[in-house]
Length: 390
Image (cartoon, rainbow, N blue to C red):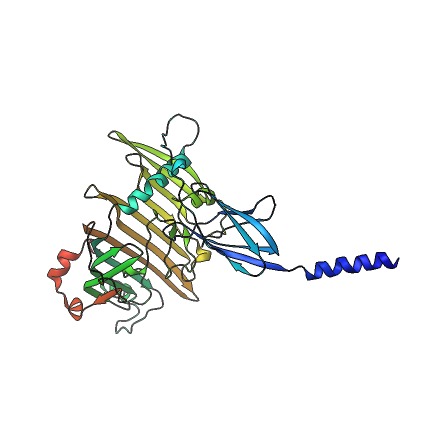
């Protein structure tokens, strides 16, 4: 009896002495872009985890020696041996597996080929991102916002319902900003913006995307990172992680000359993830994006109840596929206040594969000279690429 009790006590002491440690880290591409949904698996064990949209993973392990396998479709798997005897951080860079990027030929009827088409775009996107090199472009913005809480004192009577009065009341609730700028951009998110013209009517606070420095909505990237919109990066459908996070369905096929365009519906598999929803149009001539229309998830947007993005991509100088137009539509409610806005952005006059001076990109991302606020109507007639409505 005493021996049995002693054996139990020894087992309890061993269990109490065993310690659990946290193994964590971040998984990225060679460009240090986070990779979501990477499998992190302990070899010959059921213990594992999956990386989050920001690339982070976490495991709780007992003290000991482990072989850990990091794997993801489209990337070369890595096996790492680790001795765990304290909290440990291990970051991993996964290289693309070029053998998995075989030629995609969309043929046959019956089976929906939407996912194969998305895979074809993923296969070409590295070349698309590298093609422009460092570059410059003209950036024109017209942002309009209506705020129901805005009021001005009017000398007109309440019974005055003439069109002029209605227009004046509507105009008092509207804010508008026009911006014309020249933007330089290079690798590693280096950017420099020089505003050449700024025109403002009403209060500009709250208007969205008044600067190219606010973030990139390029869906060729694995993640859409716009801190002013969402603290959490949003996962692009055009990525290997996107193949796991989204469902794809072909909505329309059109033939233009010798080529076909495919409009594909994009839906998140799990609406709680940092994902978008909408459609993407792709050309089989080089498997490039022509157009997108995406609604962003309300639960990841602290300031908006609705946010939609529409984009056009075009071939620039027959060398690179670039975003040439973006249009944002958004609204928000707070108490009795309702705000709705639209921002149109036009990109033009591209100069590709430029050489910038070593210290060209500094701490100042955007600069506006006083003269930019003093431009006359002749300047805006030339710079304005989106006509003003009545």
